[in-house]
Image 1 (tube, rainbow, N blue to C red):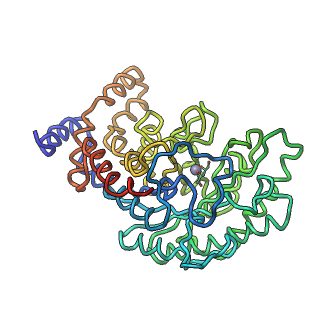
Image 2 (cartoon, rainbow, N blue to C red; image 1 turned 45 degrees about the vertical axis):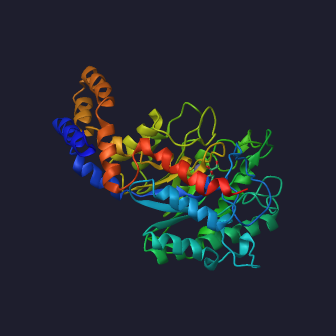
Length: 416
Ligand code: RNT
Ligand code: ZN
């Protein structure tokens, strides 16, 4: 049977449950997922020679990592060719692309240092998201940036944040697509602090100052990302869940960003999404896969990933949730990591008979709901997926590796 024939039969199965798979696929194709540039070079960037800091870590030494902007963009292009559906590109400030001999420190960054990213995105009809980089830099003093007790350190990083607002505005204006700008710092303490509120007050005021930089709210979407702990900052983080959520709630236009690796292990972001959607017009996500801790493994179709997708769809919030991916695996082929993780985790959610299930809940038919939810798990989603890949002109799941391998042999393996 061809992919189209299999799809026709699947369509009938889903149709009986009230799911219009044609409509689901049309929607799927239009939902942008933001592809993080930092998967391609283990979160290093182009503006420093030092190590990755900030309490995050990549592990692995798989050959072929991108060392230059050209290599990174070429690898991203390869990954893009393997991923169906709409994409945005998520850039970190440390990925500024300087001309030969040129350099600007983080507090002095300008739109022109990201011109190549704009060209890349525009040529591919994509939007751009942005992240100030508050890590991997000499001005991080004793592990602190925006919450540092040293005013000079804070000043440097506030200027960086403001520069990033201007760059985000430039991204939005150039691409015609709003730019989500995410503020995350690794500020915190390894051991029990003596003052928990001081750093948070300084952090609060610093973010307020960054957001005082003029910008168009319809174009730039500033976010604050929370985190419970990081490597070396196990006891305390300034940007805790309560801190960032309250900050976003109290500052019009600022969105809370939830990274599902950033909570205690039994907490689930899938349940937090509908809670926040009751209050916030828009929210943002970093979708990742934590294995035992915030390990940032490549996103896979595991239960919580599917549940996150289901909540976005069930809440009818595809237009209110900015979806970005955030993982980094240096132990496998990095192009494959991008492609496998990006291969739209939303498809199953869009083909789930959500209305039918919701009705069972509202009518308190819980036994039937349980049986039905189990039955839904084995619906022929694969047939829908393969047809979608074919229609989008990308490799199906079984041919993906072959394409990656070819690129590895021809391009990546030649990077000594
Ligand atoms: C770190 C945060 C943050 C980073 C990126 C590189 O734990 O998740 O989002 O991963 O900014
Ligand atoms: Zn994140």
